[in-house]
Length: 401
Ligand code: RM4
Ligand code: MN
Ligand code: MN
Image 1 (cartoon, rainbow, N blue to C red):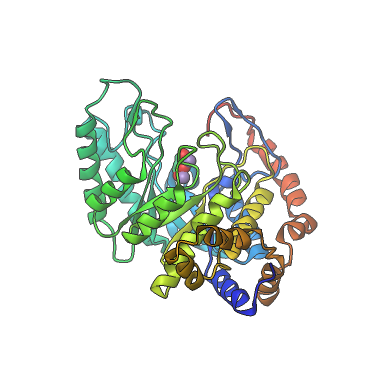
Image 2 (cartoon, rainbow, N blue to C red):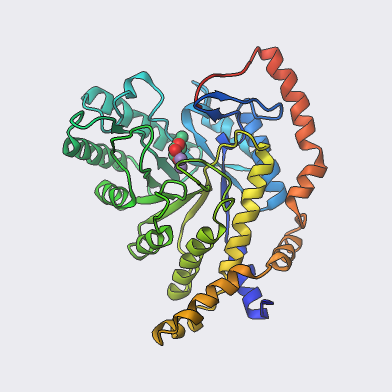
């Protein structure tokens, strides 16, 4: 199918408003539970991560912000204003602030769900500091993911833990400035395997509601069981005005953090279709934070990030081709085959010409991945960082993160 001029216009407009946040942790050396595999060009510090994010934004034109994990990215005593300047130097801004509520020893039995009040208090303190950090770096998103849960039946009081979460989230919400949003992420399992405190979208929804009006749900595409219908979750959250954002990635088994759409691009297309359909119905696009959450342990990190951004843009564009008025007529007449065909046709349309037109109009390379490869960035970063790593005495790590 060749897109009509009005479809092309709709797609170009959609692309104009589609910005994707990249994660600082996507540029650093990460690994599996069994070890880390180092890459010469991997970012060593926040400056490297912001430089890499700058390279992605320069080539794709749609990734102006970088998500940070407070304890992985900020050195003790580091001035937020300096970080703002550093980001600016690399052509990006600091995006969502992600507290680390899982790595300190006292979180062994949870953070907001910990049976010990002093640990819950410490976790709350860290979230409050993250909220203040957001204000200092002029970022309006604080994104919460909890590793909390229990591994064995009987280990914890499930209702107590729920109430502790409600209390802590309410207390955190009180510290938000106007314009700040608190995102609550869910994940079915890992590291807790018996009962995860915020395991699914319903639980995240209740927690965000309990927290207050500035709290919304964050949908990490990889955090679902295989058969789950993610686009229906998205549609319901949209209808409730509770969809705050996404963490993009793909999965095969669990929280695999594979590049978006590498396993099931149609799934991502269907999610985008729900968003475009909602926007068409309301006459304006919903405010959603689109963020990548992938840590690439074997692919070259910048390439994987650019690949993800290009995949997201491609699927977002395809989904924008659907004629919602026509689809509504087909739905009301129970013409299910034709309705389904509308989606299939959009999905299988080659949108390369539209994407190239958008990139050209924005002074960007037609193929950002090819342009990155040609730029020599990776090679130069590899040489410089390898030498710096040696000088700093950094070696292979054995840990999970
Ligand atoms: C989780 C989740 C969070 C991320 C942590 C480190 O699986 O996806 O978003 O911040 O990992
Ligand atoms: Mn995530
Ligand atoms: Mn995850």
